[in-house]
Every structure is written in structure tokens, then in C-alpha cells.
Image (cartoon, rainbow, N blue to C red; front, side):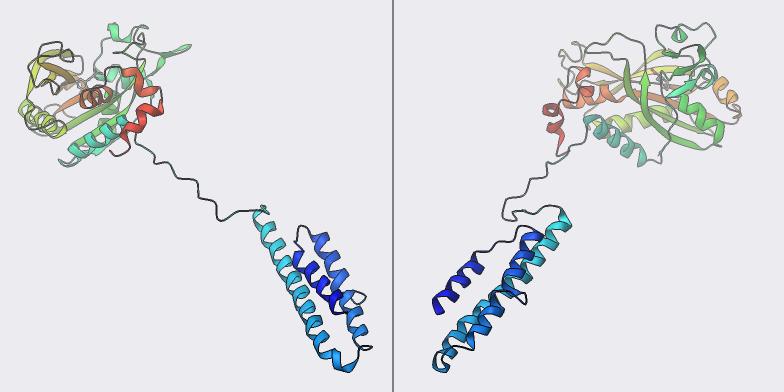
Length: 339
Ligand code: PHE
């Protein structure tokens, strides 16, 4: 009898729960009214009283083990049905979380916004699909200006009034139409131009526009603000120079160059051996633009500037092909993880 019970204990020990049905047949076999334990207990009655104590110990062990198996088996089934995974191996090492990286254009945009944020500029946004008024007319573009030409602008089919904005200057108009001076905003965003794609040009790129309108704003304010920006963005050794230029919406207009931060002004292939690289266009807001936005041009004046984020990122990280910014090659993007 003792031998028989020991075998049964081994059988119980070896039992592994796999399914509800299998656990139920285990229960029927061992613990039900007509099961093995009931049978064993009734057999006990016929055992000699002297042996009963020893055999009883084994029978009790069998009973405890069978009950324990049933309880644990039910628990296991319960928790595995919670996760839907019966066999999670908690000892396996976890999957590492790869560290994400900011896109270099996001880094540069953030830094520009921070630099101007420190002198009171806030951020404004406008739509990428724009009407003629905000992208051109309000900005003093004459009707026949070549920038409206199909070559530069992506128009929406069948509606020459709607186009993908060609610059973030459209946001100047939107802000001036709805805000009273003083105005101090930065407008970052995507712009589109119908250009052949190459290392230096793309059909879309990112700009950041700046606009400051108040009483008594002068060209000296413009120069000092942009000088401050260049020093913060690059380093203290950075010099700036302004060259006269033309934009319909600013008068006077200029382009700003910085001393080449790669060769320090000595001359290299980035600055084409001139020592200077162009980084933005700027100027005093044309009085017509202020008036188009219902701002009194006798009382208020302002300056505006617009720069390409790609261009600044290329200078900062010494990237020589603009296309790489939109190719999403992780080998490139990974290099910016810590910035
Ligand atoms: N919008 C101009 C461009 O796209 C840049 C600019 C902005 C110039 C503001 C002057 C003032 O090139």
C-alpha cells in the first residue's frame, strides 16, 4: 500500500497543468468523490492499526500535494488567460529601448527659437496652403512679378489663387492682420518652391521668419538683433555683414552674411573662398505691407528677416548635401542622439 501511494505522489509531482480540461481530469482522478484519494481513505480502514499511522502520513502527503497542484494549476491558468501568453519567460533579458534622436533641423529650429525667445519673441504659425493675398499681394508683389510664375510656385490645380506657400513671410501678413503692435514673432515652417532637386536646392525646405513692429523701430535695431543672433547661434568670433538686396516687402532690403565658421574667414569650399556665407534675407517692412494689414505706417515701423533652417544646419554640422535632411537615413539621424 505504501508503495502504491508513493507512486501516486510521484504522479502528482510530475503533473504539469496545460489546459482547463486537463486540470479538471486531474481533479476527477484524484480529488473527486469517486477519485483515488477517496478510494485510498476507504482502504485505510482495512489496514492493521499498527501500520495505519505510517500509511496515514503518506496518504496525507498525497492529499496535500494533489490539492496544492489543483490550486496552483487554477491560478496559473487564470493569470495566463489575463495576458493571453501562457509561457512568458520572465528570466529572458528585456528588449533594449533604442534612444531616439532629434532631427538636426528640429535641433536648429529649437535653438533659433530659444535665442530669439530670450529677447521677447514668441512663435506664430500659418498654413502651408496659402492664398495669393497672404503669400504675394499683401506683401507688395506686383501682379506681374516673376516669383508668381509657375516656375517657382506650386499652384493648386484649377485655382490660381491657392498655392503652397513659397516663404514664411505669409505669416507676417497673417499676424499683422490680427495683432496690434508691438509685434515680436518668429514663424517657423515648411515652404515649397518648384525647383530641380540637387545638393543645394529642394522643392521644399524649412524657413524661420522674424518680424518686429513697433513705434520707432530702425535699421540699427535690425542689425543689432541679427548680430546678437549670429553670435549666439555660432560663436563670439562670428562677424556679420549686410549686402543691399531686393524684396518687394521690405525697403531697404539686405542679405546678411556671416564670417565662414568653417575656415574662420580664411577661405574654403563652403564659403567658396570668399570667407563669407549668406544666411538670411531681411529689411525694413515696406510701408505698403503695413498699410495692407491696416497698420498705420506713419506711426509704426518694423523689420523682418527670413532664413533657411537647412542652410544654418548645413553650416553648423558641416553637411554638404541638403537632400540628406529628408531621406530619413538612420545612420545620419543617429549622429544627433545627444543634442
Ligand atoms: N521671404 C524671403 C525669402 O524667402 C526672405 C525674407 C524674409 C526677406 C523677410 C526679407 C524679410 O527669401
